Image (tube, rainbow, N blue to C red; front, side, top):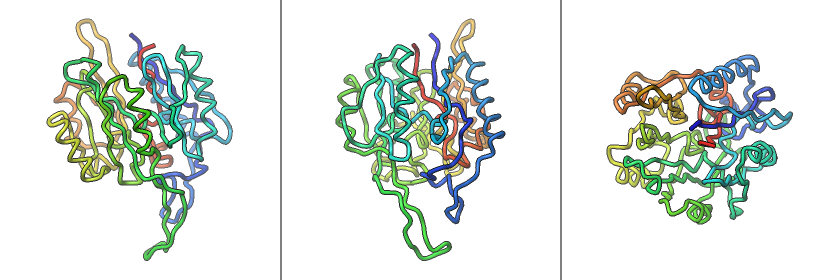
Length: 312
């Protein structure tokens, strides 16, 4: 079966709201995107996905909605249903564009059934079971304190800082457990505003997506301890260096050969050799992709740039 993803055309990608720490300079000014560099990197990612047998669906660009280039926030698929996110105010106008792109693919588009802030598969991450039994899938639901974004004074240089907060409210857990069809949903608290979504701290990978790359420094101490206890050797803790380079913002594809299926993990480049060895030791080939214009200016790498629609 062919895997399908949604990519957002980057023709209008720029930094407009500056809604996460990666989008601003030390002094709080919005960063400037290099359009030609962004288009080239996006085109390269699209070509790599297609070369690995992934069917890419395109989300047309819309002037004034640069966030469409990061469609992982759109919602999440559960069976034949697609549940739309309750996006933060800076991106709320994107919802009808996601709906128009997804309906023609044969999925029924629905509301979450909760008014609470929630940003889709970016914060609702399925982890496979070593047995391959889909009923034993574990969902990781990441959440954090929802803040009104604002400037506040501080001692230091500069004498102010910006409060960003997080994107998904813990109260959405009730609705998510009702949708998850009997699978376990594990709530985990995010603590670093630079890693504001779960897909910046977690990445399932492996032959059955049973292993988890995890940047534990991005979680509360209690959440990190609970995750270690729950997963044991299936958890691959990221170093601070790899975590800050968004190693967890990766996406696995499968290459079907004559005799077996080979997992390939598309990752932002610039990661450590030791991490590549860890990944290879679990039967997965790491494939670095340069998406630096999106990461350094927009705070999103490989996984943020696509919505995983699974097999259609």
